Length: 135
Figure 1 (cartoon, rainbow, N blue to C red):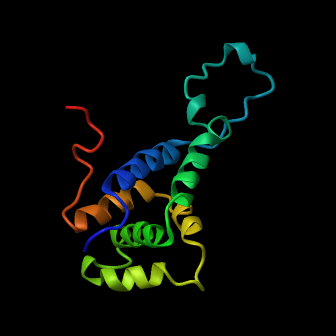
Figure 2: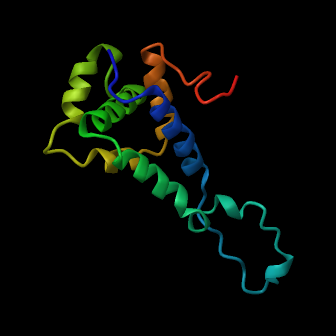
């Protein structure tokens, strides 16, 4: 299996997907509480306060060509266990199916996208170790 999409691109997507997955629903403060007394150190994780992460993940996926996005989706499916690594061609064919849901939508709906992509890479003895690090 040889990827069209670069390993660096997949690894960058994994990092951003982790940030997206770390977000939690915003907590509505009780009306009785004084908003100045509330510790808001976790506000950065709230959905509404950091929608830019989702926008960036979408833009990263949207910048990929059709073949590349199919590969990312196939990797995620392999990492999720929908397909085995030996079924790469089948996964690519399914990910490229024009009659199925948009690949980007499928990826964004995956709650554990980062873990699935990492597991998909691992199925082919690939990893993000050392990617993006300065020597």
